[in-house]
Amino acid sequence: MKRNLLIFCVMGLFILLWSAPAWAQCPEDPNDNGICDTMYVEVYPPDTLFSGPGHLVRVAIYVTHDVPDPIIDSIAGFLIPLVYISTNPSANCVLDYYYNNTTLYPSPDTDRSIFRHLEGVSNWMMKLSEQTPGLEWNHRGLNLSSGSNFWLVMNPTGTEDRLFEEGSRILLVTMTFKVDDTTGIYLDSCFWPPSDRLAFARSDAVTYIPRHNLPYCFSLSYPEVGDVNADGIIDVGDLVYLINYLYKGGPAPDPLEVGDCNSDGVIDLGDVVYLINYLFKGGPAPGPPIGTLLDYYGCKEFQKGTAIDSTPPDQDCIEYQYDGAGLLLLKHVNAGFNCCPDEILADITIEGNVITIEENESLESGGCYCLCLFDVDYQISNLESGEYTIRINGLYLEEGDEILQFTVDLASSPSGSFCVYRDHYPWGIW
Image (cartoon, rainbow, N blue to C red):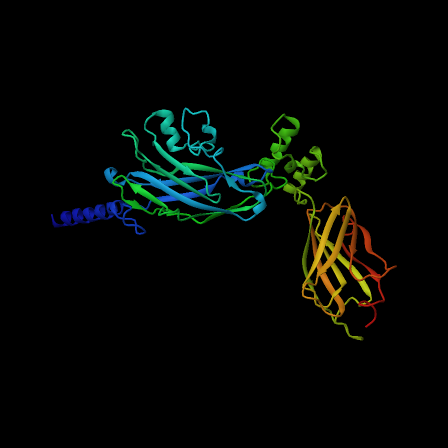
C-alpha cells in the first residue's frame, strides 16, 4: 500500500513539473505568459540574387506564439517600428506604398499587399479575409514616410475580429524593398516618436517585448555563374536545368548569363560539357577566369657571393604552376617598386588566351627616395587548360627594355619559369 502511494506521489510530482512551464512567465518579460513569444525577420533567400535595377527583395516577419490562457494571452496588437540601412547608397534601397499596401481579399491589389501569401506560405491575415470575411483586423496601419524607417501597427477593432492564434512561425507580413544595385541591408528595431517601441499587446491591453532576431543583416549579390536553377548551389540539378532549357523547351536561366558556364558569350552544348567537366572530372568552376593579387614581400636584399635569393637581381622573372583544375599560380620575381610603397596594386585582365597584369603602387604617404625589388604572388582561378600568353607590365622600365611576356601550353607544361635580363636600377649586379 505504501509502495503504491509512493508511486502515485512521484507520478503526481512529475505531472506537476511537466505542466508548470506552460504557465510560467517568459524570463525576458513577465508580461509574456508561457513560452516567450518570438518575432523573426528573414529575407526570402532567392531574392538575394540581384537581377538588375528595380530588383525586388521580400523580407518576411514571422511570429511564434503560445496561448496559455486564451482570455488573456491571445495577441491583440502589434507595434513594430524598424529601421533599415543600405550599405550601398547608389542601390537606392526603398520601401514604397506601391509594393507595400495593406489591402486584403477581395481587393485587386493583394499581389502587392504586405499580407500576401509568400511562395506557398499562407499569411494569417489574408487567409482570414479569404475564408471568413469579417474576422480580419480592421486597423492595419503602415507608415513609410521617413525614408529609412517603417512603422507597422495592427490591432483588432471590430467586434468579430479574431485574436492572433497560437502557432509556430506564422507569417505576419512581407515587406518588399526595391533596389538598383547589389548591397547589404541592415534591419533593427527603433524608437518611433513620440513614444513607440517594438511591442506586442495581450487581449487585456498589457504590452510586452517579444523575443526577436534583430539586428538582422543580409546581402544582395549577382547570381553565381553555373547556378542555373538559382537554388544557391552548383550541382547536377543545374546540369539537368540547362539541358532542359537547350533541348526540351524548359525555362531559361534567370538571368541568362548564369548559364554561360564557359564564358564564351553564348549558351550551347559547350556549357553543358563545361559543367560536366566541373562536376565530375575536376575541371575549373563555371564563370570567367578571375585574377587576384595574393601577396607581396620585399625590399629584397642581395649580397654578392651569397645565396640569399635564388634568382639574381639582374633577372626579372615569372614563375608559374597550374594544377590542371583551373588554378594558375604566378609569382613575379624581382618586380621593381618604390622601397616603401603604401600598397602594391595590380589590374589583371584575361581576354581570350592573353593574361595581362598591369602593376602599380600607391604612394599617398610620399614613398621613399629609392627603388628595390619585390616578389609578388598572383592567382588566376577558373582557367581552362590550354595555351596562354602571360604578360606583366611592370614599373620603372626604360625605353627599349624587353617586356616580361611568354607563351606556354599549360596542358603540356604545367609549371616552369621565364626570365628577362635587366641591367639598370633597381635591377643589375649588386
